Image (cartoon, rainbow, N blue to C red; front, side, top):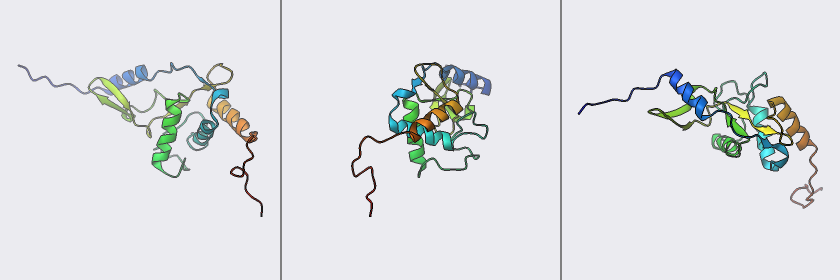
Length: 159
């Protein structure tokens, strides 16, 4: 019996597997169908986790990040997980190959705080919006929001 050892994947092999597993095949989510809380999460992500050119959503672990997304790392990861599980943001297949977990020749997943993200929303079932278009749409929508529930929990009591 021969003792066969599995060889490690090369960087180019890992990149190829990542691009195949995380290619952008998910249909964009219609912005008009997003719940209010997910719009808030997404706006926070876009305000805190974008590069200077406003071209991409950077990893939580990025040392270029200047603000905190939420009070804790765990909450940050939960926000990203919520948006990703709803297909509102997708893992960027161009993320660093070291941000993914491999076992032999399979990609088992990714490190949520280390990958780049791609926004995956559209308006009226159209094409995927660019980052700046998405930001403007969300910002305009949320700043024009008028609560319909005027319960004491939503309005502070005056003196």
